[in-house]
Length: 359
Ligand code: 1CP
Image (cartoon, rainbow, N blue to C red; front, side):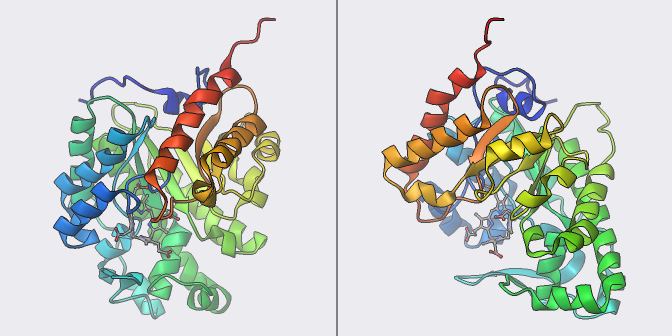
């Protein structure tokens, strides 16, 4: 059993229920900008050791909470655990990012893929969730996550990080039916993976569609959005009937917010290129919004940084339905003091935007 939550302002904001201030957390909040993360990473020897050892994953998940007044913790893991469990062989090469030993090269490779059982092949993930939940002891909610089927497919077909996405685009144009088969398998894998994280105790889930924004509008509606929707629908209701809010983040997805708002997710993540006021008027009361400080604003002098924080809170405007975050992950060379100043600024200015205005 999870301890009752002492701070549920994040969950209430996702459900657009009344709150007294805007909640704040940060994408990649556990990571290389923190010296204490780099120290544990060094001891673990590799990034994958960190992810696959629940005690280490737990330790780094909790690190940013010891420093900052954050309103949520996010499971320390990676989106590429699913393709790894499908047998692609994930490696993190120093300075080069993730790579697969056996990427998808042919239709036969797609047809060989199975849906990994999260309690066996990915056991370390629900194990980490259970441990983190115990150690958090109800302080703040824990976010579980997955990559979207489309974003996972890009890594599996490219075999590594990419700028041009030549291989996955070639598959999209030359063999769309093969890509659809891959995405269908991935959406089942994502559903099972998220369901296992929920059963292990996460309080909310987020789907990262980091590369949805490289698609044309028609391609996005064909290859990304329907599979992100299917992944959510496939989770099913948790056995204990808890309500688990969900967030969909498409980097570069600002022009598709209305379609995204009709998929069943409770909230949409915004990158920094979208005006949050325009986004709010577009989605209306269908979903909450999360974001969207330019990650580079963390390099600015603190007064300029605080001004940006205030500008975003002010442009969202009065009332619930906003979770403050960056528009993408924090960069590794950011000064941790600036992260602290950003979080404190949200605590300082946001209560004004949640006062009940007398009729
Ligand atoms: O050496 C190291 O310490 C590795 C750096 C690192 C970290 C800290 C990687 C490799 N992954 C992570 C953790 C991580 N990744 C989290 C942890 C929780 C948190 O604090 O937020 C999460 C949620 C992710 C998700 C993730 N991994 C995404 C989606 C979000 C996003 O940033 O767009 C993606 C695309 C990845 C792939 C990945 N893993 C790691 C790197 C460097 C990358 C990006 C590669 C690329 O740019 O293509």
